[in-house]
Length: 216
Image (cartoon, rainbow, N blue to C red; front, top):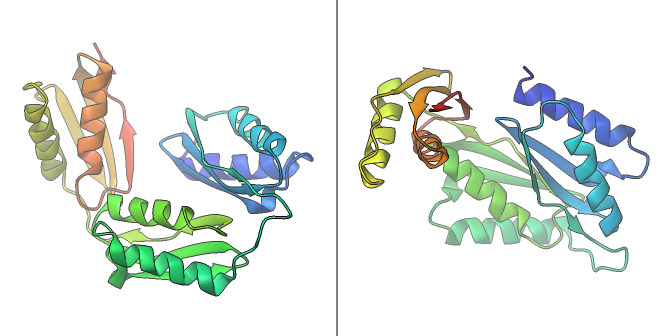
């Protein structure tokens, strides 16, 4: 089974190999086999071609397609203006610890660095930066500081289940290693499995989830 980093490299290589796509402005991120494509292309056909390329790579479990079409005639935004707008939106978003993050913009491509305590903070920063006009793509290099414990993750899952009609979490097992959480055991429905995964992401320090929960 491919790791997310291996899958990301395969998709980047496949995009570079495809002659109908200008891959230089397309970003690829992979989480648990789910691929997020971002950036800009010159036309809708290229946008659809990028999605097809990603789908044909072995190991892809799902695709979140966030590529935007930008025409040559569209006005360009300077790197300095892009950086200022990103910092401004960070300052107004209470979910983003803007004092812990740095923003670099080069030819429309944004690189985010810094350290946060929660996975959702890094994701919120990435999504916020991607919404700014003129951004061609985002490299999210923000690190999550704390390491999660199995007890903390499982307790959050149990609490989430209690909020969802008292679903029983006793059939689940949780293992953590260097920010990666492995979920196992059995649940009764896809909804219960999704609740468990969302609850695990809510734990501090989680950077990756391997969901091996079985629906019985």
